Image 1 (tube, rainbow, N blue to C red):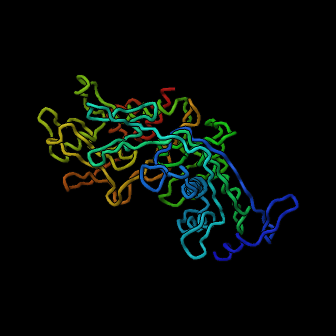
Image 2 (cartoon, one colour):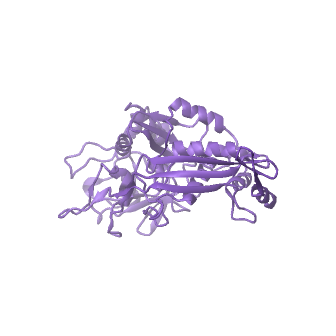
Image 3 (cartoon, one colour):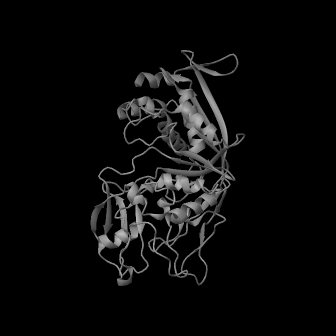
Length: 413
């Protein structure tokens, strides 16, 4: 490792054409790309829910994004070994160990820092802030809304542009650095973004001078960069066979469909008396906690928590908290489980939707926690159980809720 570090930064000489080379003849490449954000930047700074006050986009965050997306499309080269994956990754992006400096130099030049806008605004006489859908869909932006614990409505930043410069040796040993970074950049530009909640479309990138790729072109790129086998267990990734779709819908339309799918319920009796959820979780919370009003006894026949597969934690709030205490669905041995579902805009009327190949159940399983108590729960459905959940029954009894959501989107084309 020390030798590779020395080679990567060995003395250089200038080529006749003006390019840099190392003493061993390996070229030093410089790539420059300019990006604008299609959607607001959510956080992204050192402080949670705040953009960086100086640059809006930090070089360290770009490096982290490239590291993640390299792993997601090129991790198959580890041949199933997590140790080998980390070794390959450190050769590209560096590590904290001895001699672990990266041969990759990342520079970010802010071009437009953008302007702050608030997805939620307080109004006199209103107990809850008003959602500004022209800024961001409230179902996606809810972490920015004030709460009893935090009285501040947080802003996003719109209109961000920046220039990215990467400098690196064309290869390090037998590793083709150019090919690996091409794959990481493509995956980041297609599926990723900058800041927080990129899996729900915030901070979506558009490289200036490029055009949005169609579904067939994305699939072709996955065939070129990724493979079906070789991934270490537990590493989120995409393969040529992964569930990836491009739908002719705006980001707002996908957000509305996502909310309608996850909050699907029976018809109610007015705005303040919504119908029961089509999903089994609320009734199962009532059963597990043994607390519910006489007129609201649990009825759903399914005794599981399938929406956990969209990501954890999930907090269940009930209108009458004296009867129904809040409960939290969470990993037993961790704070959160990242959602395998990604959706983000590629253009004004085109969104890519992808489901990462990733664990749906965290190590140790999933628990329901309330009033200092907890119990283990099941999240996977059988086909028979899926037929009893309306949003899944409407998609042919699909037992995978993420796949059913993608089918739900496709039906809106």
